[in-house]
Amino acid sequence: MTDGLMRVVIGGAWRLDDPLPTIAVKGDRVRIESLDLTFFDSSLPAWIFGNFKNVRQLDLSSLPPRLQSLVRMAEKASVNDHLGDAPGVLAQFGSWGVESADSWGRSFNHIGNTFMGFARALVGRAKVNWMDFALQLQTAGVDALPIVALLGFLTGLIMAYVGLIQLRQVGATVYVANLVSLAMTREMGALMTGVIACGRTSTAFASQLGSMNVSQETDALRALGINPIEYLAVPRILAVTLMVPLLATFATFIGVFGGMIVACAGDLSIEQYLTQAVRAITFKSFLVGFIKSIAFGFIAAWAGCYRGSVAKRSALGVGEAATSAAVLGITLIVVSDALFAVIFNLFNL
Amino acid sequence: MSADSADILTCEAMAIGHGNKVIMDRLTFGLAPGKILAVVGPSGCGKSTLMRALGGLDEPLAGTSTLFGINLVTASSKDRAALLRRTGFLFQGSALFSSLTLLENVEMPMREFLQAPKREIRQLAEYKLALVGLADAMDKLPSEISGGMAKRAGIARAIALDPEVIFLDEPNAGLDPMSSGRLDELILRIRESFGTTVVLVSHEVSSILRIADLCVYLDPDVGTMGAYAAPKTFLQAGNHAKAHAFFTQTV
Image 1 (cartoon, rainbow over the protein chains, first blue to last red):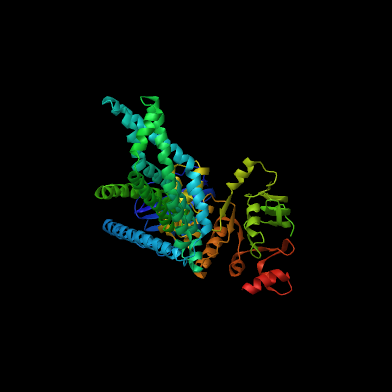
Image 2 (cartoon, one colour):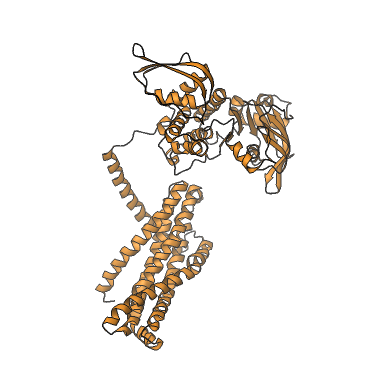
């Protein structure tokens, strides 16, 4: 180093596969020279660019012209399209607030448009893809029977097992049939089926509609004068809203059967269990569960369609849409279940 | 038209297609190192399929194809993998990994093939992005940048390992004239600085005339190459009628 000028001499062969030397840059004036430089690939200009890009005065004049050109190419003014400055913390917080408000606005808008779509479909003014409706009855409904049966059966079984342990302490094991039947009819049948619909159907809808967003199929529908909500969302939501109550009813009976297996393996006879179960399942309880399952079906399908329709146009966006559809669906189902509990209590149901 | 022993890539009586369906056959030509070859022809004539076959991504249906003197038809999977280290690809939609930043996209092939420590790989990737003018966008996700920037990021990834040959599928597609011009300039600079051989598929006649040394015109009517020459020769009437029509009607 002389007169504040750092002199760097490079030589030998520089290859991508070889380790690069480390260097401590001193001062803001550097001259790089070459001595016996036998070979170099992009590792050498990358090393010079990486270590000396902040040097105020960098003299490369004694380097081979090709090397000079490779370093200068990287130093040239950026030709990026406008990206804007990185936002500060306050700006980020503000953006988050605005985005959240936008998100709520979009979701209400989507719900409104969905109901409008249903209304238009009812009077025959909507272009609905009825082929999709038939397909979804199969995929979201019939194809879900095995998993609904398994989870319904296990839910009834677990409730009966836990109930037996508690009720045995007070000598009231016969009421395990009431516990399982009532819980499955009013609550668990609908809730479990709703959660399954979120896991199976919401995510599928979000992926389908998100992928259609990526490939601009929804734009093409708009360009053809077809409302994507009416064409894509209405048949899906309608199919799931119709199928989830049927699946929930099925899950309820399977759950009661699951409870019977445990109860009859313990203290009860089949006759005792069935008599108690039939007494416990009233029309009111059945109606409560049925109404809930209609709502849960609608929520699960709507969450998938909504998240899919607002998915970002990338593979990552489709994945995020599927995840958020499941989370949104399950959250809304649990929240609405709590609201139903209050409402049904008010109406003595 | 026939291949030369000094050529970096050659094909001899090659047939290409999808499955068993041949879409082009009797393809015979070679390309010398450091040259830029444009593959042109009407839509659906098999330009991208030819490029993939030349690059060793797909096997030709018949004939032979060599890259760096290695026959791609008979090469073992290990040899083919080694060839990929010496080539770079830019796909039509850029094909950047959407969950990775631009820097991570460029680092990915380096991490796969180089034994260098993280710091050096980062330095190399930053340099490659700076080369294509994306120094300020390294931490952006592909969804946050424009189409032109995505193409340049795709090129940065394609040249990550200093390949001897790069294959570019429609690099100018969907770009405005300014961005397209910048991209042409970048391709020329890469060729000049690294001596890279370039094979590109394009419909942009002005771009082809500007950067390509040679041009192969694929003629779907006869199912083979209609012409192989310097692109400027196609502008003269009387030379290769269909290629002439293709060039003059789009200029």
